[in-house]
Length: 158
Image: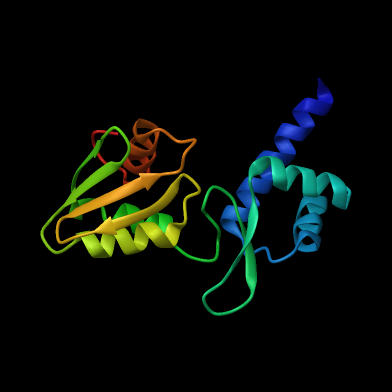
């Protein structure tokens, strides 16, 4: 049981580190983990990253960084997305898509930021003037995506 607890704690720390620091390589991540009492092999770290769905992404200014659940310390998108909440009037799920209603003229800005977040649960979005259609990834229900978006946008009805 101690091994399972250690694995959970290590993986939680990996998520925290990736979300709060720019981590370009597994070596950088191993050093940070070691400094916090988790001395792991490269193979173990690779398995942890795979299990967490972490991936390396290209940065707009060049270079790469790890991200988990579409979040990385390289940008402030999640906070910026929450800042967009006053522009969002509502989110509803349909049979196969999620519809976000915004104030007039705000849909494209909200959709662009949503695309920048790069959530694994979203295939893509289409924005008009005040409406965004968001297509969830096959394994994600529209209801689950709606809940995620409400949480990210910190909407009252979340």
